[in-house]
Length: 170
Image 1 (spheres, rainbow, N blue to C red):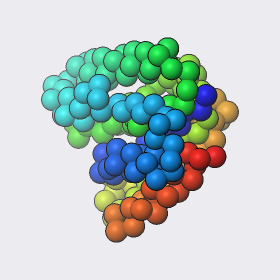
Image 2: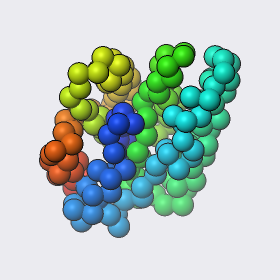
Image 3: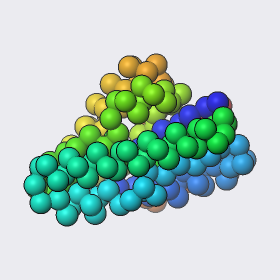
Image 4: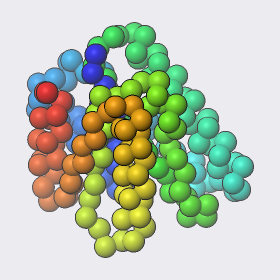
């Protein structure tokens, strides 16, 4: 069994990149695709949080739903899984929240953690990408996972698709 955890900012269309990489690699039938977004739109829910306590509750409920889904998928098939998830979530009022706690990584021990990053002049985007790198580095060293950073450019999306597809094949 192989598990790949793919993360990146909401500004990057991870779902399309992952699906195209699976198709073009020829491994679509060999991987179960799990998308955190199918557990709910965490970005919208976080924007609706009125205070820190409700923001933490949103994160806790979201993670529990994701964890149940991944556990269910693991029980249903002992094959390969690619998870499209978040490392951090930004809320303009409360700042950054850890989106996938360390218990997820300790439990599932992904083989590879992939971060899709983009160039940006937006300070908040760069700050969040730095936070994501910190979390990914911490989790990869804690779990023995490899860490792969794929640079994404909108005008060269297929480069990111190819790079992820090559990783899926190996």
